[in-house]
Image 1 (cartoon, rainbow, N blue to C red):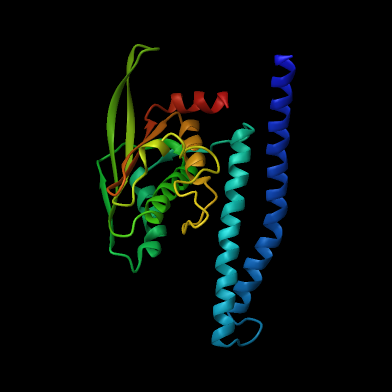
Image 2 (cartoon, one colour):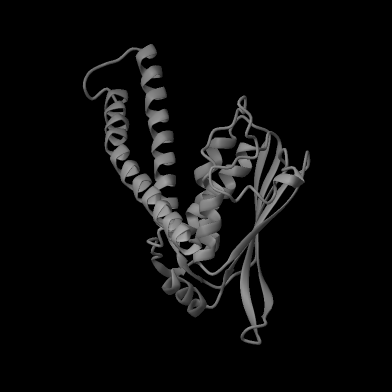
Amino acid sequence: QQKRTAERLAEMDYLKTQFLAVMSHELRTPLNSIIGFSKVLLKGIDGPINERQAQDLKYIHESGQHLLALVQDIIDISRINAGKMELQLEEVDLREIVQSAMDAVTPLVQGKPITLEQHIDELPPLYADRRRLRQIMLNLLSNAIKFTEKGYISVSAQIVESWNTCTEQQESFVQVSVSDTGIGIPADRLTEIFEEFTQVDSSDSRSRDGAGLGLPITKKLIELHGGRIWVKSKVGEGSTFTFTLPLNSRGVQEVVRTV
C-alpha cells in the first residue's frame, strides 16, 4: 500500500510539473506579442501617440515583462524538478559576471540611498554555465534590493578550502556572498525561504512583488553546479546570502551527469 501511494504521489508530481511547463510555454506566446506590440507603439512606428497614451503603453510593456519573468521562473523550476535542466559548462570570469549583473540592477536602486559594492579577490576561471551563473547573481541582487530601502548591497568573493571526508582530499571552492542592510529575515522563516512559492512577507498586504521562486531556483542552480547556499540574517539589520561553487571542473561535470 505504501509503495502504491508513493508511486501515485510521484506520478501526480510529474503530471503537475508537466502541466506547469506546458501552460508556461502557452502563456509566453501571447505575452511576447503584448510586449512586442506595446514596444512598437511606444516607438511611434505606427504613428504618433500622446503623453497619456505613452504612459499607459509603458505600464503595459513593463507589466508584460514582469509576467514573462514569472512565467520563465515557472518554466525553470519545472525543468529542474523534472531533471531536464542542462548546464552549458565553460570557463567563465566571475568578476565579469558580477559586474554584468550589477549593471543590470543599477536602475533598480536609482532614487534610493543605496550603494552597490564589490569586494572580489583575484580568482581563477570558474567552470560553470555563464547564463545560469548570471541568473543566480541577478536573483540574489534583485532580492536584496527588494528588501533594502537604504544602506548598501555588497558582493564579495574569495577562495576557500574544505576537507572532503568522502575522498579524504582538500577541495577548493569559490565562496560568494551577497550582503544587504535590509529588513532582515525572522529566525523562524530562515528554513522556509528556499521553498517554492514561499515569501518572507506572506501577508495579504505585502508590498513586494514576486511568486517566491527566485531563491528556490537559485538554490537548485547552485546545487546543479555542485555547490550549496545558506543565509544569515537579523531582523532590522540585513541579510547575507552565501554560496559556494567548486573550482574542480570534474566535480561539476559529475553533478550534471547525475541530474
